[in-house]
Image 1 (cartoon, one colour):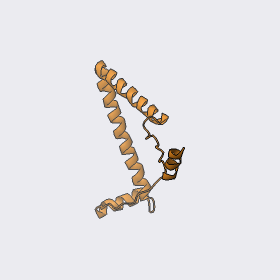
Image 2 (cartoon, rainbow, N blue to C red):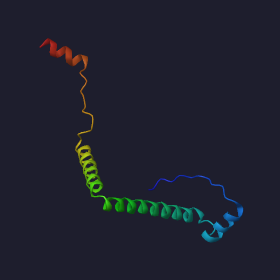
Image 3 (cartoon, rainbow, N blue to C red):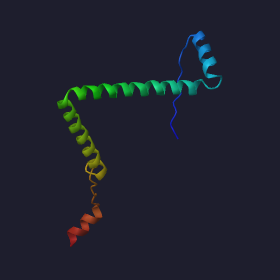
Image 4 (cartoon, rainbow, N blue to C red):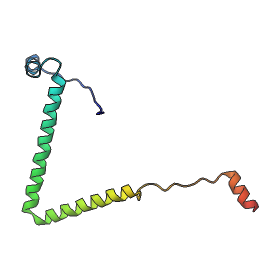
Length: 103
């Protein structure tokens, strides 16, 4: 289930009335959620297109981006393999160390 956060916004009354008319009573949250998701999605797409255009015009930057992408993938694979996890260390109890000294 998706986590939900609640927050308040202040709107001028005429704008609130328009919102209520457009979204419908009891559907304002869903309406605003869809608008925000679309706006953020459009923003990400525009940024991605700008990067692609920049890389298309500059082969050196494209190669550098590919190197960074490869490095990121390799780092993630290493993480998944456990290379970045702390190695567990066993604590030696006093009773164990005394027994080993007696032998």
